[in-house]
Image 1 (cartoon, rainbow, N blue to C red):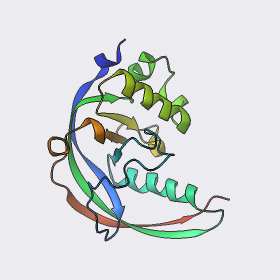
Image 2 (spheres, one colour):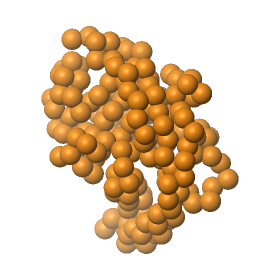
Image 3 (cartoon, helix red, strand yellow):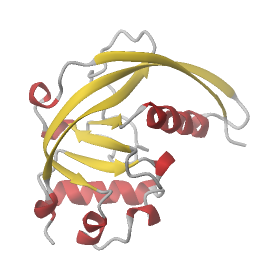
Image 4 (cartoon, rainbow, N blue to C red):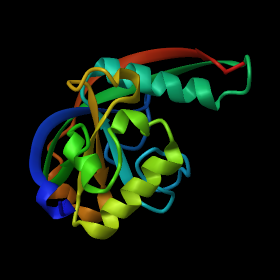
Length: 180
């Protein structure tokens, strides 16, 4: 099955967070291509990640700050959460087993935890399909397809056509303790 046959339009409201009181806006792409350890993009590929709901925001971000802290070190972070309308014309839904099978991979639950593999998969998909984004299971809720992340490749979209007006939802405060 060709990857292009998996492309579909997707529209929805998703959540994104930034540091509380940040001077930059929720759709500012200043840091969108810097991290080498994002799951669905490599450094140099400007990408935004959005969550399906506040529980996904909370648990996904909590996992990240806990994993990035030195062993036993505590940290508290306040984040502002925004609702953002998104419209993509060419998205691949990796919650559908056909998406993984189309590129010779087993069910996504078998390999989503391996960042090198997810980055390689995203690189392959970007090279072989004119994809604007991916709909992927949340690592925190692999058993619940209703909880997901939308990955948007900023170099493949027109931001004005893709994003609606962001609306502030709430501030959350996360306490984490570095892995031991």
